[in-house]
Image (cartoon, rainbow, N blue to C red; front, side, top):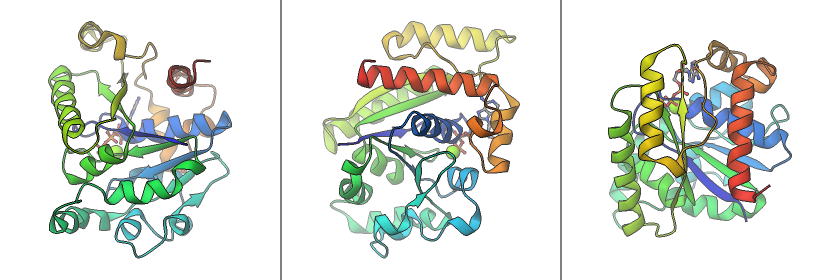
Length: 256
Ligand SMILES: Nc1ncnc2c1ncn2[C@@H]1O[C@H](COP(=O)(O)OP(=O)(O)OP(=O)(O)O)[C@@H](O)[C@H]1O
Ligand SMILES: [Mg+2]
């Protein structure tokens, strides 16, 4: 039975999508069966790894029950992962869900439950908000992986997100856990990065991974080639960091 991990932070531009793409890719190269669900109407993860002509249907058609989930999933070779793409239609999904009333949080879970046992890990790339889309992701998920950018107000952001997770735990998904917290866009040369990193580690000690993701330009360039960092710059610091982080995530889960 696959484990569903939502990559969430309500703050925009902290590295959710970059992490979702590269952690999935690393897991795929390690032989795990992985599905990356793009659950953001920006479609950044989809367009970061797929060419336009590879995308036929999207997660919006799936949750609207117009298309079967198996028919919307794209199978990739490099990196060796499956992707459920998204597009701007998903922006209308919150209205559709809201109208539904009871069960409005279950749209994604209902679909992922159908295919969960075909995968080792399903990663969900969430949008930068705590609206119904993210609530759907948290309701479907077994755990939440939290990227934190090294900047002011990082701690406040984590605290707010943990409150939301607790709310979801009390209402929709009693089993959800925090998978872990990791620092992104870390720049050893800036005092701010070092200070924020120390603060986050002090406050959320056991949850924070040893590996952090450095600020590295190749990580932002790879999606323009529709590649993960493991094809675009396999020997660079970005690939090394995402490999180290992913291995730590797998070790926490599989104890190896
Ligand atoms: N470690 C990094 N080093 C340099 N640039 C990065 C790094 N991580 C992400 N970026 C760049 O920063 C921008 C924001 O990253 P990304 O899209 O992953 O964040 P996000 O949290 O998914 O954003 P959104 O909230 O809009 O979905 C992108 O242009 C991305 O390429
Ligand atoms: Mg994103």
